Length: 159
Image (tube, rainbow, N blue to C red; front, side):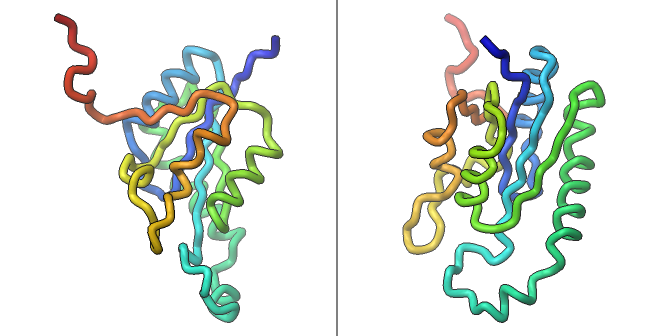
């Protein structure tokens, strides 16, 4: 059986969650795995009715990807250390679509970690739609973990 040596971390903005970064890094280090961070940015937002003219005025995507990639690395390195190999991908466009394309063209991950805020998994977008991040788990063939900054009540305590 082939051992997966990749840990995925999914994020939707530059708000890196320290608990998620540390959890993913510890798991990657324990497994001698690489950490693959996927930052999914929708520069247009959830508005499907954005005029084409407005879409064409978006900033240079190559430069934007580079800036985001560097920002993620600067935020994560102090949290994960230098011993964990770090790979950062920045995908621009509809988050669900970009996520599915990425997963279809990449190897299987051992574990996927949600690196964004926990509220992003629960609060719907406009028009009552379910947030894109809430559907990630069902599309993965590996465990999906949402690390918490503090344990939930009763967690980690013994009687």
